[in-house]
Length: 130
Image: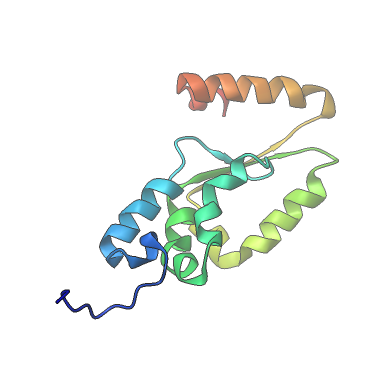
């Protein structure tokens, strides 16, 4: 006779883990090793786990915002998107962000700065650029 369980399987191995283990897995997934460029489509995958289901969102959204550094690179074409991103976060999540860099760029330096950022992040010298 199999041991009885008080929890009902959800069909998701992650959701079937005890809350403490699930929290550890989620935190490893949600903590970025470098600043998150909020307008970079590739960077949005960092918080993808909190998009999976409402329970994961409830359990981990605060961790995502309080433990990561965010960056907005703004120019005249990305300004509307940056404003939408800020508005969508709401005041609660914006207040939780420990560090938000907003860099206003002219169009001719954007590509140069992105290349410099990638090199600095790879070398672990992000402070030099920011």
